Image (cartoon, rainbow, N blue to C red; front, side, top):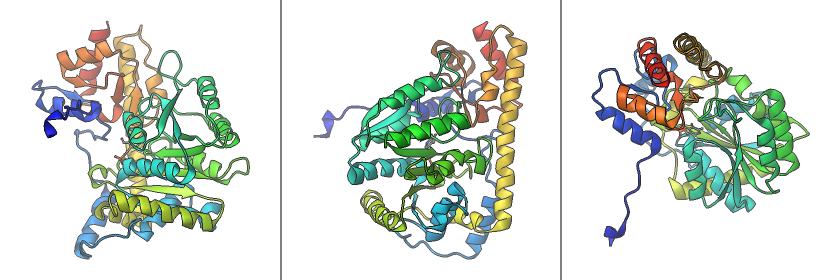
Length: 400
Ligand SMILES: Cc1ncc(COP(=O)(O)O)c(C=O)c1O
């Protein structure tokens, strides 16, 4: 019976990492997968995470099930981190948050929720986008629609195109927006562009899903959340949104699978009804979330000293990536003055659409063991001062 099953091609990102592992080139560099690496090429355990884990180990609380929607303390902290503790939605309890296994699960739950509870059949997603978005919403049974995101160079924003694309959506459709550090491009909207887009989303009565996987990697924890905060408090806007956040990146807790879904509503009563439906979806998908990673985040965000230390370290991660961006542009300008890489320093977060062609990406892998996605997406956080020279020399020699 099973012999009719066809072999599925490997995941574009994880498949490359498998290839990287068996590549024997001594100076190989993996710039494909979206994981932060430090100067030594390691993904560090953050200081506050370490401290929280030490305390948790000392207190060992056992391995009981969490509630379906996760820990209430975690959920409150998450909503506050996204919206700010003084936001009217928080004060009036007009939100429903559930702890989820990473941002991926929360995105899927959002799709299921909008389909079952709001009758949504279509979702609008930027082109390009994180490739998993397309699979997640196809699996949730939604029809995919895309709006073009980039200018003709493929490295900067074309807001007119975005606006025109979203204008084609119909009332009752969902739209997914990258709140900050757009993956794969690193290209974000300005404040004015956000407000224009959010007004259009409200006017057309679309259901927005804010994918918030990189809070703290753009310009800061609060400023990165600004589009969500403005949308959910302004009278121009409907005030109703779903936010899917992840702690994979900003806590370096990738494998612990920690994230959340937060839905905002006009009343506390509606929020409670929404939570009950979200719980029903979770119960049939994975019953309840894993405990350890969420407990770390809750511990850090419930302790002023640990929160302060976490923020300081996160600021450092962001500053280091920015420095690498600037250094990369300087080195490429020295090596290859005729090519323009200045967009790399303007883009934000871990990723950049470098403008390197698929053919050159293939050669970088084959000749130098340097791995990026064929779209030209580079994980800037995979660079360091030891491999930067090697990478820039290789790119220059191939493009020359
Ligand atoms: C844009 C975007 N959304 C969501 C996620 C999901 O993150 P998680 O690993 O927490 O599931 C990622 C991870 O790479 C991402 O890049």
